Image 1 (cartoon, rainbow, N blue to C red):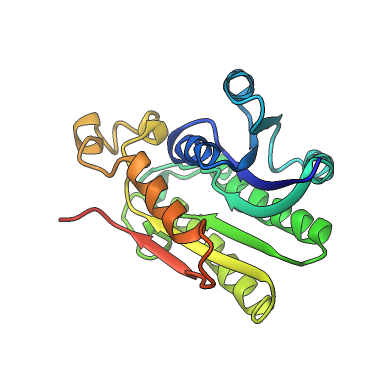
Image 2 (tube, rainbow, N blue to C red):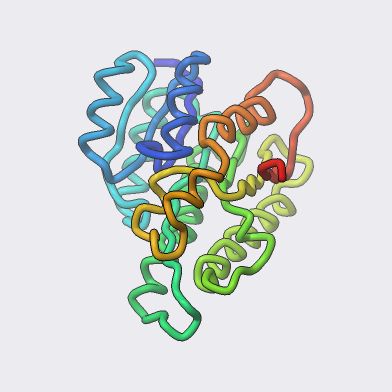
Length: 230
């Protein structure tokens, strides 16, 4: 098969799912890497000609290597969207070692997947979209660990930009503010449902990302900060 492929992580809920659905509507073929087997299978049935789910953990190096190889056999990887998110919100004195390990999974997966895609593509003709958070730009008192990880992702993103300057590999950092998604379901003591209802809609954020990144204009948006109107 000779498809132009979008690879995305965490595309079974929230912003990731919105991106998957909107990109498929625009005719892209999406390879979706996530842990939610039921949702991936549902998406495969809904979009049999434009979606392929890959069930696994992005921190599993052997899984990532095999998955990238399998995807490359389907077609040409043109876009990589690192979207998978993990968050633990606590007061600074409440963090435990296990929290750190869990929180670092997003950064570890971002680096592992990006490295393997770059190797497979031979570092040619690729857009890497790293979706982070406004937490990568400023601190918050109960987000010390989350900010630390996001600042790490930002550092990795900025380093990639320097490494691939003046090449056909383009690196884009995306920094959305709070969105009203199930991201907050396990953190209701920090962000209540009422507060989350004031946040941005994931569908709107997805539209902003797609309009700025997925187009035929010979320009690249290197950083995209998305905030709700006050």
